[in-house]
Amino acid sequence: MGEDYNTSVTVIKNNLIVALPAEMTDSCIQNIEKTIIDKTYQKNIRGVLLNFSMVTVMDTYTYQAFENITRVFSLMGIQTIWVGLNPGVVFGLIDLDVAINTRIKMAINLEIGLTLLN
Image (cartoon, rainbow, N blue to C red):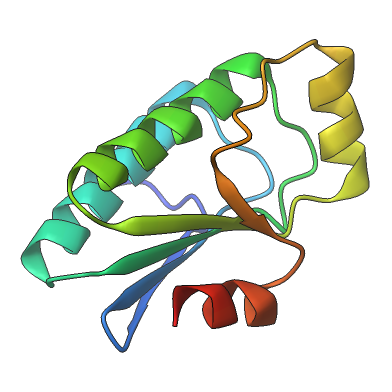
């Protein structure tokens, strides 16, 4: 991905697990987006888990960027689940009055997210 953003991308049984870093710049998000979309296309991925458990702050731009990534995956026929959003991040998004897309599948942790994918 060029620079090191502490993002881990793992493939397990046609599922992509993306562990997102605690802090993300705009260029980091763009690099993550390119990497995971390319990898899903190349590896015949059926499901993606976006793991936000290390993320401590999420602004409107970051939320919308990952919402758009989720929509891209949906158009590709790939199921996407967001996991690990901590209460502080959730309350922060509510305080920012972010229009939360309730159609995005979410799970409290990775184990439940994997169960939802399978």
